[in-house]
Length: 160
Image (cartoon, rainbow, N blue to C red; front, side, top):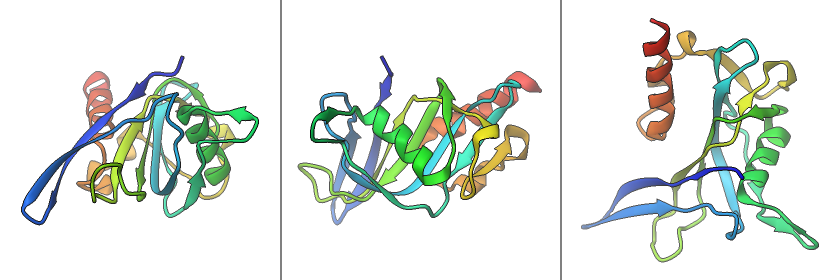
């Protein structure tokens, strides 16, 4: 069973403030337009690797007729088809979606799923790989989920 992580984010809309809880579960089809995606994890040489899918944009349908597909499976396929990267061992994947969130007028949020590390040997064009020591957290921007920053800081603390 793949562990699914909920990312909470507060957004301002006029005078109102929303705390958004983006829930991705096996029971809820994931239908979204991905505009930014990151995956990170340990490669086979125990290096922390971040994949930036960059400007690649694709639709992640929540499944097709006759075949039930979980959100995690869909995200894995989306990274593979969008970047050529194969995610092989447990860690995390994050994406920004632009489909309005049910019950609000907020049109974008991040969701983070613990999915898999990236095998650098299976990377296609469109994915950029960096080791943790090469990554400047400022590259990720303020909108990047905290879990990505935390992973980098944890890795650096363990390897200093």
